[in-house]
Amino acid sequence: MFVDDIGILHPHNNEKIMQIHDNRLIAECTSYDFKEMLERKKVKSWLKSVSAFANTDGGSLFYGVNDEGEVVGLENPQADADFISEMIKARLDPVPEVQLIPMEYEGRTLLEVKVKAGVLTPYYYYQDGTRTAFVRVGNESVECNAQQLLSLVLKGTHMTWDSLPTQVDAHKHSFIILANTFREQTHQEWNDKHLESFGLVTSDGKLTNAGLLFVDNCTVFQSRIFCTRWTGLYKDDAISSVEHRANLVLLLKYGMDFIKNYTMSGWVKMPNYRLNLPDYSDRAIFEGLVNHLIHRDYTVMGGEVHIDIYDDRVELVSPGAMLDGTQIQDRDIYNVPSIRRNPVIADMFTQLDYMEKRGSGLRKMRELTEKLPNFLPGKEPRYKTEASSFFTTFYNLNWGENGRIPVEEVADRVNSTLKKCPVNEESSEKKFGENGKSSEKKFGENGKSSVKTFGDSQKSSVEKFGDSSLSSETRFGNNSESSETRFGKVANENKSVGKTAQKIIDLVISDPSISAEAMAYRIGVSSRAVEKQIAKLRSMGILTREGATFGGYWRIIVKP
Image (tube, rainbow, N blue to C red):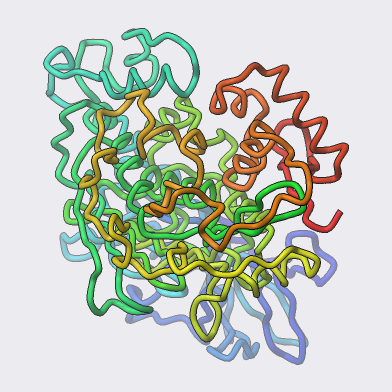
């Protein structure tokens, strides 16, 4: 829609979307370009911005404003508006929805070209028989690469890559791993009819792209993760590096196993229970890895998810930036709408109870980390996007400027009244590779290996996320007899809360969002027994619930 008849928008007009202070324009829209004058001979210089805005999240060009935001005005805004309208109709295909909005400030007239986000993408700039589509990256309009163009085509046809059918017959493949995982996670029976209802198989028996990513013998080249534990704080020498190519369910398991093998967890003795002080929130990292597997751009053939572990942080990197072209580091993560690049994959992970439907992953990662007793402000997860990549960084809560923080210091920070435990020489603070059966072993080398058949109910490192039946003593490769020897034995001066209550505390530290029902299942007791223990912990001032019954969090109170 074009508004060709020029009128004057006064400051009180509700359609005005910017402010002017000290003769400078301050735009409130997240995407905009300033143009001092209209380039009539170099129309591509500004039409590419119109194409880019239409192909991403919309935006505005302001004519009569220089690069510094100073309002200089236009000599003939009506003629400029007519020319802009004519060029958009002649050089862009399809023609995007545009409004031409003039406004006056202190006798100077400027013109806003407001471009609405398009639904018929891609919007091409056309000249001399060549069609070029542009997208917005940061504050620039750049030419689409092959993957971006494919994404725009899918968007314009209201389809996504993961929903596209293939020519592969579904009956030639099995979904045993997916079926076993579904049973374990939901406690419901699997039915092969789910394959079609979940979008993995078409009505005529063909696999979709999403289906290819969940079959047992997944051969999709880009369905890979690279896992590396680096020495120190930079990419120098690697302690361990492995590559996994498998279906998405196994990739999630392999990735989490690698992270658990190469991160640590200390603990301190409270008066009547043990308080774990992990380097990272298990559930937050789980949410992060799920997020990267779901939202990555699978059209990038040479791309994969990277897990890089350093002494002071864990970084997750995947191909594919924000769909709307914005940069996540410039956004408020509490107000980022859920836009799914791969809705079929996302729905499948939701069905497996690996994520919530409401798309609150970024916020949840931060909140889960903040619930840990050893959390410090400034250690929140950080998110960053570049032209074609998304980064999530988790910071080691037990690492300071001078290296790993002694457990006594962490204990003093958590609660100055905590009983101090001397550090045992065989403690988990030892560096990778120093224990006889250390976590430096490559993925899958241990007898109770993380590469057991998925769905095996034996007590291995591939047990469901959050399972504490083996307890935190075995999670990170620590082979001491028990957690009582990690930082020294302490006399039991107070009556312990009991085994079941201690397991509840461990589960809450691992996943503050865990439900009481899930606690009962993972501990192996009745829901009534768990409710009884929760009531006891709450009455003792050890455990509390924050937020709603659904969507809230448990918190261990270290200073009751």
